[in-house]
Image (cartoon, rainbow, N blue to C red; front, side, top):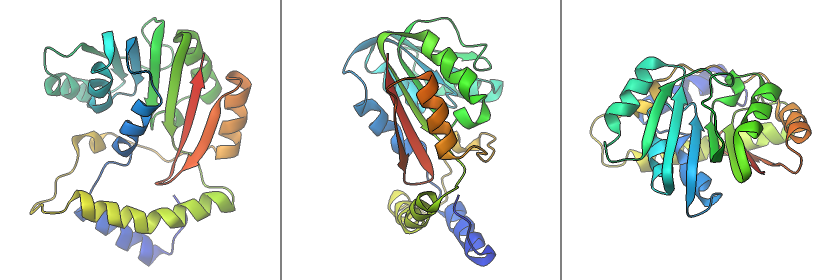
Length: 219
């Protein structure tokens, strides 16, 4: 996140605690727009409580696999998913523990910065079916003026989103998906882009608001 004066950072953290909203789920609809209307199979790496898996399942003819290394959160994903949903959840560590594909769609949201970058991208490429789509929403360390500019622009928009998404609520409702343990990104966007282009020729990357970047690659 953009470096802020301590007092302003504390005020922002207090505001977000009082009016929480899920920055990752904000991009779920955008992810769906990158995908075909129908596909056979999909994999969501770092599925958390399964929000994205359930969205993908509305388009999957054969089913969706969600994996996460946290057994507790995988259990919660199973509880939240109706039995009729064509989805399965597995406790597994990426990249080595990913169930064998191939998959027509692979998604990875706010997870890649926890994993070895090049190795994970290469493994995801191997698991993608010919003509399939890989979509990543990730976090990068702020490095240059573009990162800081987007960070500063995101601050007032973050406040606005917090107000809109919590409008009418009398009590704080913290999304279950926000309970997972996180850590800050350490690799800057430029290095991520360089490694991604090496492993995934023709990949499209873009810096985004709310301290995120996106990656789309079609095999």
